[in-house]
Length: 144
Image (cartoon, rainbow, N blue to C red; front, side, top):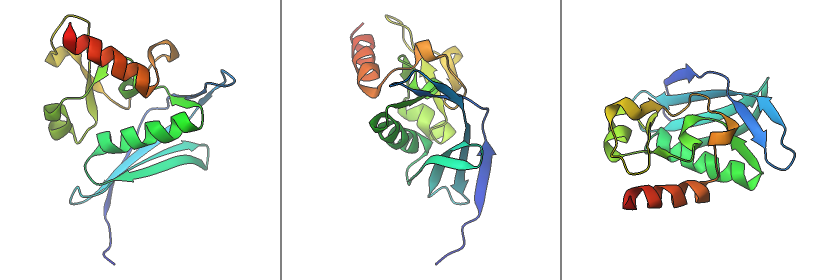
C-alpha cells in the first residue's frame, strides 16, 4: 500500500439544510487530493462528527456530484455555489480548477469568465435546488 500525501483545504462554513424540517446547520467542508491528483476527497463535518465523506478519481466535480446524490437521499441540501439552480461546470472549468469552479449562468446568455465562482463557497438556500431541478434549468438555458 502506498503512502498518500494529502493536499488539504478547509472551506468556509456553509449551511446544511434538512429539507424535511427546514432546519439549517453550520458545517465545514474539507477537501483534499493526493499529491499526484489521482484521488479527491470531500468531507462534510458538523463539529467533530463526519456527516458524509466521498472519494472520486477524476476531480472534485465528480466527488461533488456523488455527494449531492447521497445528501439528497438523506433529504439534505448543502448550501454551496455548485448546487445552485444555475450552476454549470464546463470541461475547461473542470480541467483548470480540478472541478472546484463553476459558472453561474443566466438564461439566454453565454458563459463568461466573470461568472466563474468557487463551487464550495456558501450560497443562499433560495438559490440551491435538487439535481433534477438543476438539470431542468440547464436544459432550458442550453436551448435559450
